[in-house]
Length: 73
Image (tube, rainbow, N blue to C red; front, side, top):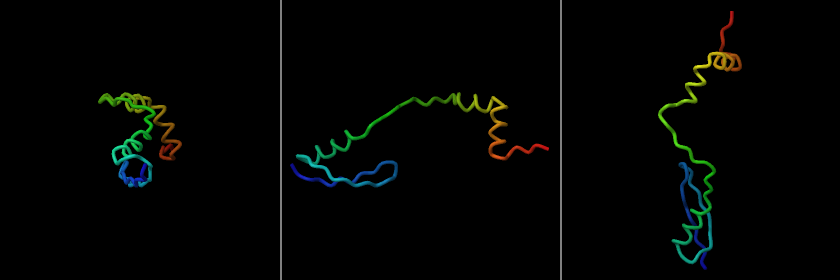
């Protein structure tokens, strides 16, 4: 086995690590296998969560109060 220095980029962040592998392909596979996906959800155009939040005027007013942006006279 040989040591390989692998430089890669994830979300515009450049990273570097060293792994032991038989060849470059195996070294890449080691890095790929270390990625853990916790949750994958489909995003739809309906934006239900935003509509629910904005539709509830009380919730919106409470948020404005917390942020100190509600002008009560």
